[in-house]
Amino acid sequence: MPQFLKQPVELVIFDWDGTLMDSEQVIVRCMQGAITDMELEPRKDHEVSNIIGLGLLEAAAALYPGSDKNFAHQLADHYRNHYFHVAQGRGDLFPGVVELLNQLKSKGVSIAVATGKSRRGLDLVLKDSGLEGIFDATRCADETRSKPHPQMVLEILEELSIAPGATLMVGDTEYDLEMATRAQVASIGVSYGVHAVERLWRHHPIACIEQIGAIFNHI
Image (cartoon, rainbow, N blue to C red):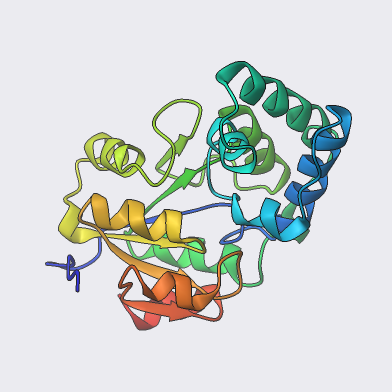
């Protein structure tokens, strides 16, 4: 069982979709729109939900195994055409998110985001939710390696000069928790997101919590 916390927590890295923002239905609707646009073989909503957290190109490959990069780019483009016409603001954040982020900052804990979103997508929701500028670092799937590869986390640690043993990753998918384990970073799963708790426990998080503010019980 991974036990990576070796000192007081100096950094909490959050996933975005399904962890800080309740965006599952928006993502599913936009991806289903992209699938319809391209007249592809249909996918059930739960199949689309399962790929939330991956980069768009990796998500396309997961939904349509054996497809090539050109196909993945086309599906991603259609998805973006739908997504960037949807507004998601502060009201779509899960309850307690803003308070938690402000409390962490007030205690001197750095906060970051590691997301499967594109840079354009993350910047849009940060602005619309009023969280623009609050995070000390952010990484997106289109500027580094997609989850569950650990590169996102490792780049954030390097940028902020914080050790893995003082870092906590919080996410709602096994992609988040596997990424944390591969980066030798402790993790907490949230049970209200995309993946079932049973899937999260496979990656040995410190805890699985039912609401975001419960993080303070574990740091």
